[in-house]
Length: 559
Image 1 (cartoon, rainbow, N blue to C red):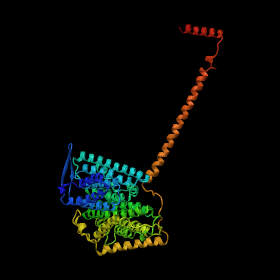
Image 2: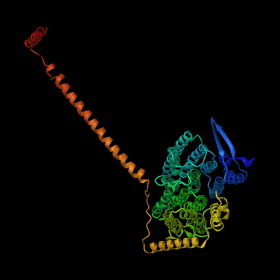
Image 3: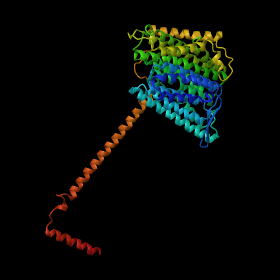
Image 4: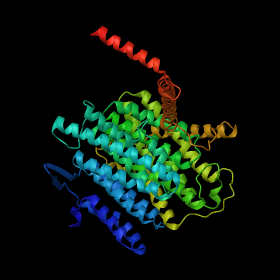
């Protein structure tokens, strides 16, 4: 019986259990939910259709792609739950399980309307992980986050509706870019994926969430968007250029960012760019690379967010200008962070090495050498801001004098599990490759690839050391750094201020004109009808008789 349940249902039931159980039982329910859900995957098959009016929703569709993301999301949920066991915040616990269930519902959806429904579940449930921090900044960021997610949902719904009337089908499959509906759907996916100019919700909201909430957020929303792009837009050439831009521009913002979780948010966009580029290339090697890198990114990015969350939990700050020297008192956290940094930087024997290179190799095979060069530069940038800056500024920079210890044991266990997965996938990628959508013949550990990557990494490290020793390293700016959010933080308020000023001037002018007109009317009335006007004067009898005679004469003449 348990083997036939839709994956999302297990998590929704777990959320209800957490809601009604006492604090001592909630932790057990949280831990059991992804375990039971993982067991459920082994017997999962297509089914669970639901008819609503005349529309049949396919709640579960199982193939290699959806199953891989299902395994990934169960693993990510388990690690994130272990990391959050010290928390007694029921709001976060319920929201996290509903959020993970929504992600699973989306990747197993067999039709676009079901995908849309879980798309909205993701949006509504995830915002509570931002609000759970209960600060003015998190409250404002949460509302901005929710607004953007609602816009994404509206665009998706509009695109699905038009697509259904155009084609008569709602199957989740290849759509392409040949209609207005397809563009609406692509933009909706692009918002959740962090396309350029559509990405600021991620950089804005993720760093404002709780230390545990950010770990959950980093695992699901953007990866569901990657899954949707793989399903609906593989081989769409425009995504190659979008992906390249995504890999490049975050590098320049991350190196000057003071908030280390914002650095990781920019780094997430950078890594998503590799996946989007692979989807745009569309070959079997590129798709395998995009999907495997999504798998690895969830783990190593989660590990980095966990290490920074541990620092925030123990010190109360995550500003690089306020911390440093923590390796002395947080040795385990330091070691786990270095594993995550090595993985995202694609060091050999770590997970990023065996997946990112597949996308780069596919770019060369398909005749895009400039894409390969751009991705190579982006890889060096990743090493600088995520591979070196994160661990260096948090743990090895000038001692801040903060005396803390490693975080609670549940946090260390979660980071340890993620670190083991990073090393295992990087050293023995066969298991990961066996889960990919297409057969894999790619061999990551050949001499050319290893030497090229090691040369890139060594020169990037030398460049960092030279910049550091000569005081040419870009300095962190202890403020909110603006990129595309300049439009709504600066441009739009400026325009609205100008419009408000113009309207105020018009209103003031209208009030002054009305006042002057009223004064003129009153003056005229006083002059004509006032006490000193001609009409109010005392007239002599002879004058009145003369006036009457003249009037009578005029009447006679006229008649």
